[in-house]
Image (tube, rainbow, N blue to C red):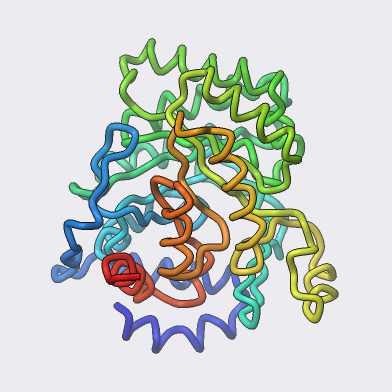
Length: 342
């Protein structure tokens, strides 16, 4: 798989990023049909139990890459401990106009304003019913663009009814910067009824033991983070994911900032987000005081970054942008780095 990516990478990086993404997924789908495709051996030292689930490794694939759960056998074969699919919206929607995805390899940076392009929960749920055994899968849920904030709960519940029975945990995405008004749902007065409504639905569906997580933005003020943490803990949800992409152009290296700004709106991910995301996670962990587990996401580029997030107190870690730039061999390198002496 690594050799195939090494051959394909020069071609993929000459293409428009979204075209390259689609081609890579086409190739990935062909790879999923290989009879020799199987998960690599992992050290038992990587195993951990979080949210009541047994993870074979703390390293997962973050939401946003496999929105429709189309390449689950491939992610299993690469050795991920879990995969978060989505963001899935209840009804199909095309997302924002193209171009909407940009990469800057010299900085390990991705800018996206995809806007929750989704096939819809019906289609994704049907695909999930054929998911490979032995792979932990999370479902990342969002609302449709045209749904007003006041009715956001309806959308999350509609998506949950279809996706939740097919996955191991649910993540509520209220932190993407690419759906107008979505981040307003992080405000405590909006978050309380949203979480309460989702937990009520979980109980009504007999899924009380299924973890529900909340994914947060890196652009929240410290005082807002503390208030959100208290709402999350009091609600009874299972944990937090931090962080999503950032709107802060200040994280971009100065030599690159003008080019990035010229591409327009969108969230930034990758190596330049590392310091900001880690600072936010450390604030959240301090506010949590061990009351809920946290999944580290954002700016993690290799074994040292993942180890640092786990040492900070995160229970699990997720990557996305680094996989685009480094290729499938990154998963094994991170696993080796985690089991080798620091």
